[in-house]
Length: 181
Image (cartoon, rainbow, N blue to C red; front, side, top):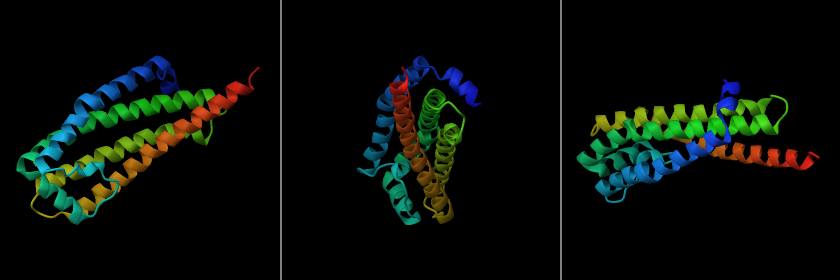
């Protein structure tokens, strides 16, 4: 899998994915989440939180109102499925390409290409939990809320780790290039 990521992770592919990710984020994701906030009087989407309690999740869902909950479900099952997939592809290709070039021997850091897939999996499971909470409202589902919150924490931690790993790869590549004659 890693060799495929390196082969497909060309600079052209990475730049294309970054452009698509940016355009999709600005033109689709941001307006979609702005709609949720508009329905709720300024309460943000649950999945923007790193961690939350079942009570907080219930309060947020109540604030969305019936129409906001319907819109949020659609967003969670469409937009917030496509965006994490794009993000995972972008980071996977970027990490595979950087680490292949920066580190001669395959090692622990080469396994870092799995981090974006962990973020994607956590994000999709978080979405499933949130949709379950939205569908179950007004019933309280504390176990589902706790699981969704845990997946949110894993997702945001993995995304932060991806950024750190890219920085490590860039620094290692820069060091390697400055040492070459």
